Structure formats: structure tokens, C-alpha cells
Length: 131
View 1 (spheres, rainbow, N blue to C red):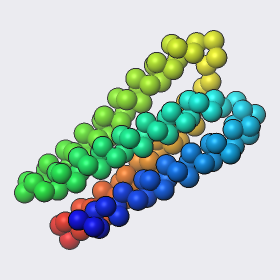
View 2: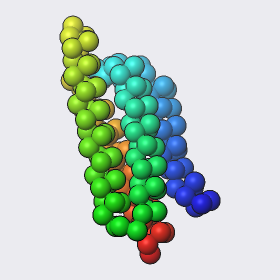
View 3: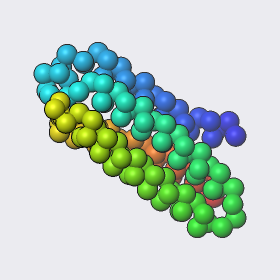
View 4: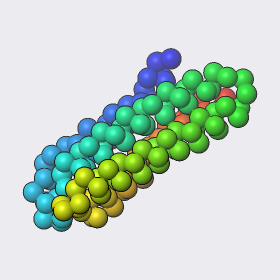
């Protein structure tokens, strides 16, 4: 149980690191045409979704059927992608005059970073419980 709590630390560290970069690089982000507020919200959303996906995967590993774990990983990815699509649609409609395509690309980069950390955590979690 203690090791499982340690597994979520990379997500927390990533969230704090990215928020620090965004906060201290606010002026630089503006020069690059990126919207600071959008990226902060995207970082928060990806962190929350990644924690939820971790909890889903942790619960799925307790099931004797190995397919449950695979379904939880795929479900987490599907939920994350659906929320991303909805967020981009809301952003485009809500900020039609002040829309920044570069901010969406930067948020998708954040998505990939969180996805990489989430896959690494899922692999460690699977290895600990089945290895």
C-alpha cells in the first residue's frame, strides 16, 4: 500500500513542475503567443484526470480478470481524450476573438507528457501486483 502511494508522486511532481514553469514563464509564454490561463487550466485538468485514471487502474488490478486492467487503461485514455475534445471546443467557441492555436498545441504537448507519466505508473503498478 505504501508503494502504491509512492507511485502517484511523479504525477504530483510533474504538476508542480509544470505549474512553476508556467507561472515563472508567463511573460515568455505571451511572447510565444500562448495563453497562460488556458495552459494553467489544461495542466490542472490533465492532473485531475491522470489521478482519476490511476485510481481506476489501481482498483482494476484487484480484480482477478486481467482484462479489467486493460479496460481501465483504455477507459482512462478515452475519458482523457473526450475531455480534451470538449475543452478545445469550449475554448474555440468561448474565445473566438482571442483564439490561440499555439496554446492548443502546447496543451496537447502537456497531454503527451501526462500520458507518458501515466503509462510509466501503470506499468510499475502492474509489475508490482502481477510480477
